[in-house]
Length: 327
Ligand code: ATP
Ligand code: LTN
Image (cartoon, rainbow, N blue to C red; front, side, top):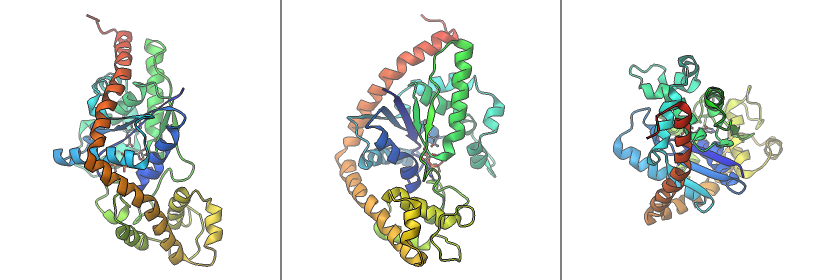
């Protein structure tokens, strides 16, 4: 059976972009594959995090995985920091990564732009992500479009290692949705929707109340026309809202165009907000229950043990192949 691995950084509270680009597919894939889903907390600290906030956000991501339907009987759910092999293999792979490769990463360029002090970890971030994936010989990695470049690097590192030290790692493939792989900001359709955007109006948080969701959608930027038409080049804002609508309702973009022909943006936005509420309200109710019960902490404890059991033999093999003296 194929192996799946993915993760989300607890660097804030999750958005609809995280749900559509990643979590929705986590739930789908667990029916057919061995799946490991982590809270990438070692990645989250590549930008400064308040300790109390990091703890709270990590718990929140775990509860959201569970509330969205990731089933701990089918999938292993764990904290990256609870499995030591991630940091260790991360270092080993950092030594195989070229500066030029890291300098080309668009996520690094975006996140470091205009900043005075940039942590070295933000730069070497992709080598750690490669370690997460290769440690379990994952075949498939469900992610949004923005992670494609990191996956390419992961494949290059796996190939480089295999060539130098002998066949060890599987070369992973991305599992990227056809529609919704890059949900854009509600206030600026040239930027991706992101949980670390300082303007909360730019995203729908998975924990936003129904009224906040309605308000944010009604205020979402649209062009001055009125035609509900999917045309990302000419109408990026409406096209983005249509992608959200399509993924949440499983309707095709053509069906949505037909449904709102001649009606203008108003009715479309109103119905979109209701569709989002219909998906998020039950998820939020489950979230509250799970958080209160503390169930997620048991899941994480068990998950760390299961993940470590798989990761340790791989790390031992890698170290042996690289020539570390075994005592
Ligand atoms: P940050 O703003 O802190 O960098 P983020 O919101 O971009 O965070 P990540 O933790 O980097 O979220 O991403 C988690 C997963 O969600 C990844 O698979 C990523 O590709 C996906 N994802 C994030 N934002 C979007 C988006 N706007 N559209 C589709 N998928 C997304
Ligand atoms: N870099 C990813 C989060 C992440 C990840 C992973 C995704 C860390 N390790 C391993 C897939 C597989 C991001 O979404 N920013």
